[in-house]
Image 1 (cartoon, rainbow, N blue to C red):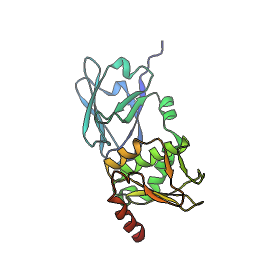
Image 2: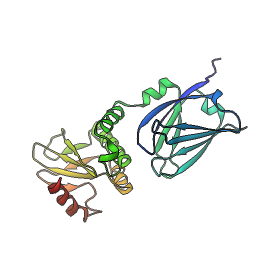
Image 3: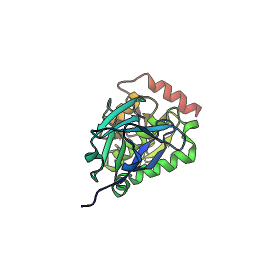
Image 4: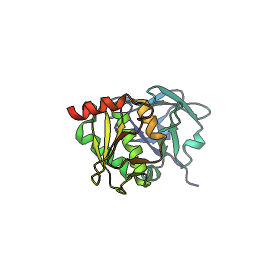
Length: 226
């Protein structure tokens, strides 16, 4: 029987937002001592303590910006399957530990494209909240892949303009616009709760306009200023 002794951790940094993959060896964790796994920017992502029952993982969560403790049996961690590390407040997955082949499969092409995009524009200096922007862009990509992004005029090729605090979805066929905010936790919650985004023919609206009517005026001013 082949016993797994190595794995990788794929986890986004809560400080700089970068996705890194780290080697994760079962021989690197002496019992009772904390071992830190850090981002290339220097921020600590994960602390691991080996005990009698398995491993205690303390992760720095980029979703709720607090720390979470996960106690995982060694048999589970080294099973050859992927162990998901999630935010205990929202249940969103913030990291994965497992065999390199399976972790690689989970790092989807659109996630890699977003990584390149964020690196090219320098996300820390441009976006009001780079983590929220990344999550909103990722969710929008999923909606589009499922055919849920379209205009009432029949156009499914919607252009996306990216600003520091929002996305502007634009239909070139009828010149309609839909605003998707990407600045706060509330903005992220809004797009996570929808399965489709329909632009109004020749219209202008916000994804959350019914709940946040006051934001429409703010957006019109920013569009003129940007």
